[in-house]
Amino acid sequence: MSEVRGGVYPFCKACTASSVPWRTPDTTTGLSGRGTRFYGHRDVCLDCGSSVRTLFATFLLVPVSRLGRYRIIKTGGRSYVGRLVPDQPMPAPVKSATAEQPPPSEFKNHPELVDANYEQAEMHWAARDSAGALPLYEKSLAACEKVLKADDPATLQVRLRVAQVRLAIGDYGAAIPWFELVTPQLVRVFGPDHKLTRIAIEAITGAQLMVGGPREEVQLLSELLTHDEMLLGRQHPKVLRTRAALGRAHMFADQLTRAIQVLEMTLADSIEGLGADHPDTGVYRGRLLEICEQATTRGRKKDRELANAARRRWALV
Ligand SMILES: [Zn+2]
Image 1 (tube, rainbow, N blue to C red):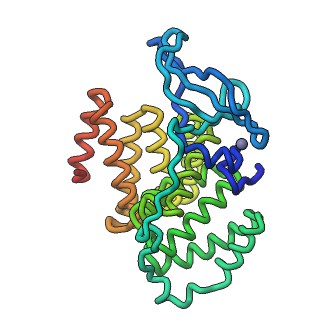
Image 2 (image 1 turned 120 degrees about the vertical axis):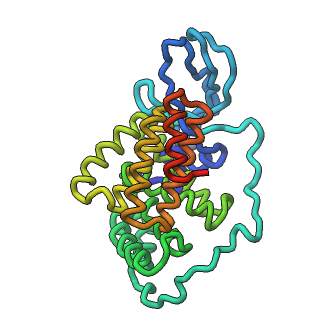
Image 3 (image 1 turned 135 degrees about the vertical axis):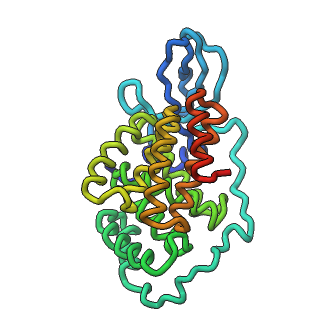
């Protein structure tokens, strides 16, 4: 797996900058006759080989409505990865003074955390040696999590790096759960427009595109979970992280009943393993609520009933 720092793999820097993350929909044409199809082939990029295509909703293979323009790279057969090309030119990111100012960290009160690991890791990372950087970042993260809160700004920055390194070495099964966990924490602590939050959102979309659709993601995370659960037990932070990501992949694959069940299990184990007030437990509670809201608005009767029961059980509002 080659590394791409300038753009979101496999797109080049320029193509990444002129497009936004887009989660590839499940395009299997159902019995209803509805589907989607790309037309046209413009602005071929010589750097990454992507081209701009227009997506139409189809009925019995006849295009009926235009859904938008996407920058597409074929990845063999009928599969592809894509990014949305906005119809309006992309506005420059809004720079608000407060958004870029990091919230106070407890880091300065823990001089023992200033060790060589993080600095050395950054050097390996800058030199594109991700494999060399990974164990150093992990050591640094373990030290941070021992004394700082899981969503302390300092911890979050190391967590994000661990996720980025996992992505850079092509370990999507580990990268996706990490990004799924830290993105809501980054949004809450740094704000939705902060550079670090944007990095995480770009990266997770890139990782999900590389895996394929939500069904492939469910497959990948399920296999990983079976393996890790046997090895580490149900309440290990890694197992919790993977299971929460699996629940969300079920949601995107339109398997809402399964999504609710998986997230309820994650939340119960997280309360028991990490504690009800742990920041990660807070993320899992938020994810369960998100799925319940999806089930309420677009689920079948059974999904809605399950969502209502879950809301009552966990006092979700
Ligand atoms: Zn390109």
